[in-house]
Image (cartoon, rainbow, N blue to C red; front, side, top):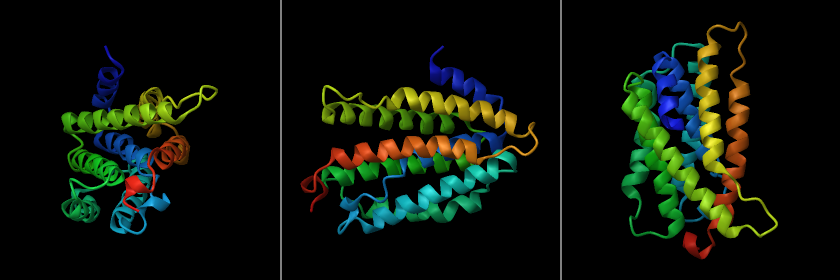
Length: 209
């Protein structure tokens, strides 16, 4: 059984709110590069969308890990924002824009899962896309690192964090005073390393500056 197959088995044992927590943390891990200066001047709307998605992911996790989860109505405003930005994006734009768009597509897949947490295939697709981004950034990091530097192992880290998130989502309702910030800190640490690779992976020219 692959890591993802085992994790999907674990997810099948969770309630809807636990699944929402786990998939919301994907947004925390992959949307933390919103402060990259290459967003300016051409991609300010994209930056705003990433910032909104990042904040939304943190909020959903906090609400879902020990509560009742979020409704489709709560997902709708941020989803509409992301869809507007996607519609205005240039499919033939510079590489940095293509990177942003790929992340915004991941956001829509996470929103699909949040809106229907009982649908394990939606959850799987969001996890699979996160793995694809992790692998691509791992390759980017390897290309830009020197022989004396250890390239980031994003794919391994993504798998390990996802498994921990799913495991701890099961414990959250059983442990009095469970602290949702502990899971956030883990994903935020990943996000900082991930954002650094994105920042180093694209030149100003590749951002259309």
